[in-house]
Length: 124
Image 1 (cartoon, rainbow, N blue to C red):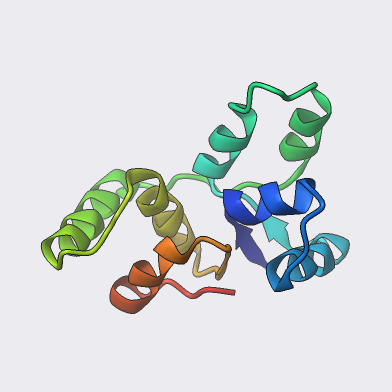
Image 2: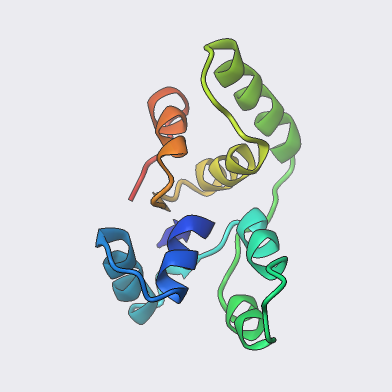
């Protein structure tokens, strides 16, 4: 099972290519994709959605928020910011969801490299 980031999902839906899109295609075919809650919110907030995208997104499994999530997010972000690393809030929330469920993240966003280096995030 892999968790999916918005950047790869958007590229996939736009018909872009790349190793992440190919991996997503294989994972979808195998039923091995789940969505962090923040990714669901980011995708569903797109103003151009016709409703089809929403049905697809809501059909995919998503990760639950478990007790202590917000505190772990805050501490992780504080640690990264204290190191001088870039730590956008949405990325922090996505990372923590992956860490809580011990899932790799499939992304094309290089901003997650600091989370991998300092927080233990596995990148797919």
